[in-house]
Image (cartoon, rainbow, N blue to C red; front, side):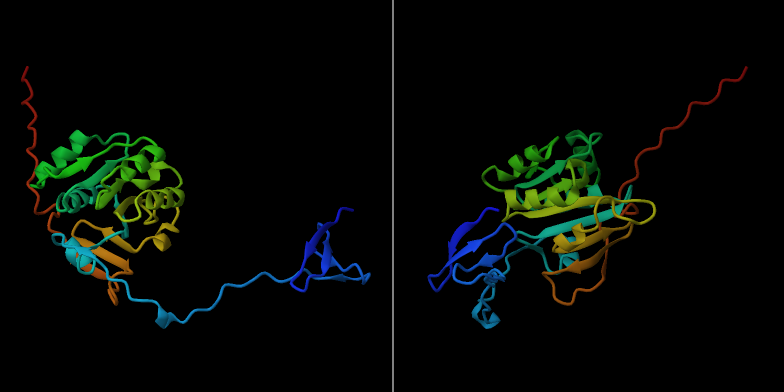
Length: 250
């Protein structure tokens, strides 16, 4: 059996076995190893209050976020397919100068985003777009200087395991507000791991008529808030319908 020498606080030599027990040279008995040092307790009053910087954004995001977009916030946006998540996210990104929108869906191109934004009447001259294929490319786009004040990932589940992707993106740009879009299945469950809700500072569910705030750490007492959408399908201009040619009569 192998032993290794170690010293305790009194200067006496102990010999530790691989099992984590110690044996004193002068006593032929086994005793437990010293306990692990605990973290010191600090009074909460010694910490200074942090001033939260917010960016003013248009409605309904201003009310849904509890008074504006907090710098460095992690926001989770959920909703069913076709409810208008991309349209509302583009409206938020277009209102923040030098924001970054990252479409990760294989069938979603920057040209499609431009068509959606123009159909909704959005100003896109200050909006940047990057289309990453992997998590490494997404982190590299966020890490470029200057860091974007807002980055929107549509959708986060495409880049890999959702929780790991979330942590990597937060580490790449800790001072940027990140909005991660996640799809909701027909059964009402979130596509991916539901632990994303605990990692986010705010969760907003988009329906066809409202933005529903489920949680918001940056707004005390926000509760479950329903904000009417400004770009709901009822207010968007309808796309022209293509008429079928008349059938030829024999």
